[in-house]
Figure 1 (cartoon, helix red, strand yellow):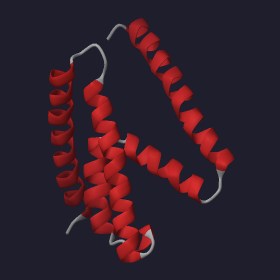
Figure 2 (cartoon, rainbow, N blue to C red):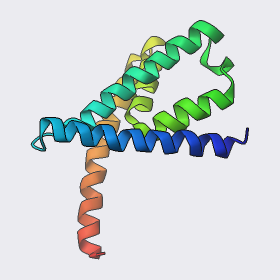
Figure 3 (spheres, rainbow, N blue to C red):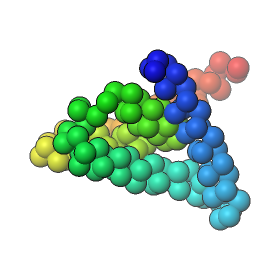
Length: 130
């Protein structure tokens, strides 16, 4: 099957699941805290770990998993569901390889630089008034 079709299919389903699950979480627990987003991010982390474990059991290494399956489920579905799961998977892989320093730089750098870039974007957006 065409790679773009797999990405569109997986991404569409992931987007819909993210929207409805986050909306359910917010309506269930209120808007004082982003419970819906937290729920989606944590579930995404569990799901990407579940896929990694299952894939490694079946194919031994992630690289041996058919690219179509990875595109549909990991890149497409989970990529649209939450990119946080991909971030955590990459950090986990580095930790498993014993790369503690790179993991720390990646995780702390992503968090702090990401927050700083959101701040920069907000200020620039306000300055441009669009």
